[in-house]
Image (cartoon, rainbow, N blue to C red; front, side):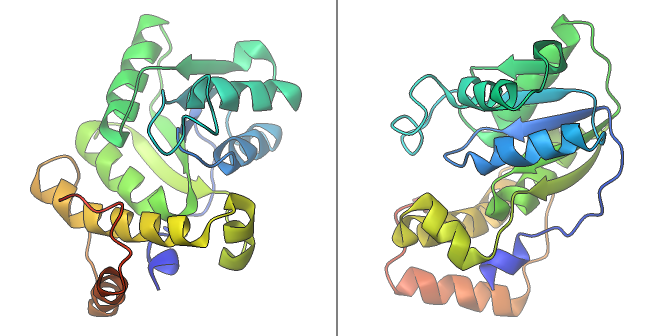
Length: 204
């Protein structure tokens, strides 16, 4: 239920830049390279420093590892911009915009590339903090069972799903994101998982 809720189901269209949001999931870079190879975007911007959930997986920083993945798969260096300081989704957008401005790169549209269960929050946050940017969302989204195998920790994935669902409401209330409807069945699924103990990613 939560996995499907966070899928924005946007249809891809050409955009000025693909913005890959830092996380523990190399699938962000995988999907970003697919967009570049398909001609959907001419430029990739990877954003992210490190977080407790990513430092062991990407010790040099999320954006740095994403860039290395893209280079290894043939994306030219001049088609990649990195932002290496952001530690949360709001900073991903605020600092990415600053990096683009500093390099004299003007963009009016973007494809936001995130982990599968961050799509909706990425969209809501970007629309609040960068409202003039025309955005659609996507992710590397295998079936959930395959995704869990790739990450290697089912409890971690469920806890992240629960945490991102909570953040939809908490961040909107705090003014960091535009409100998103949370259907009753999604709220019920969220509460069931919280009651089952998947609380490690909740904001207290």
